[in-house]
Length: 222
Ligand code: SAH
Image (cartoon, rainbow, N blue to C red; front, side):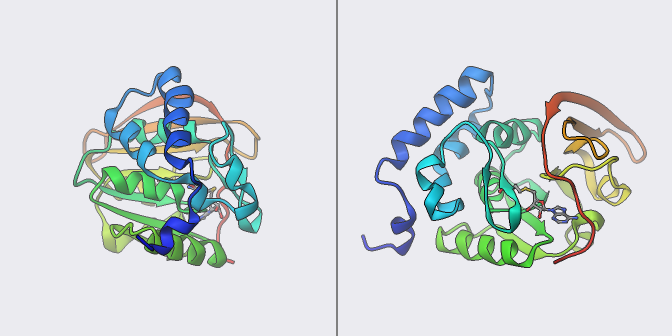
């Protein structure tokens, strides 16, 4: 009963998670049971700086280290739902940040590969995911613009940072039938959340899921 991971959790964690799922996700139309189950199970307070633990389930993004953010719960759920994840899927995430979305994706999919350009964030996320026992997530510090060529193909690719266009490398790394979800918009504060499905070797079907606000993709590591 003396699991070190327990010390990271709020005493009313489960109740807060249930309330978040009901009020922020179900009421807004998230219906994929796998996504709701995953969001119910991952303790979000373990992924924010300790002074923000009490706000972990607020209906907004929160600051994390390196001047980055952990995405709003609804956006994590919306992207996971759009990615149509199933058990056994191979997933690539660009922008590990806190590691929270990777943990959620990992509860549904078979294997998650996640890349973060900030070394401090990548290390923190990796240690956190290990402490919480999420064993199917591989974290790499690097520039995600080239994807993760050695681990292709991916059934789903999710980008937690926005760019003016979808990198060609990501499209190539999608499996047939694979889904890519990414915020697209130049240097604007508001972007469109795009879903791209690979329907053939050179064929993709695009859908716009609406307006979102993400930090930009930045090339190189730090
Ligand atoms: N999924 C995260 C949200 C992270 S915000 C979570 O659940 O907490 C987006 C992250 O993308 C930031 O941490 C930022 O450092 C990272 N990022 C931006 N450009 C990148 C790039 N080219 N390669 C990898 N990571 C990048």
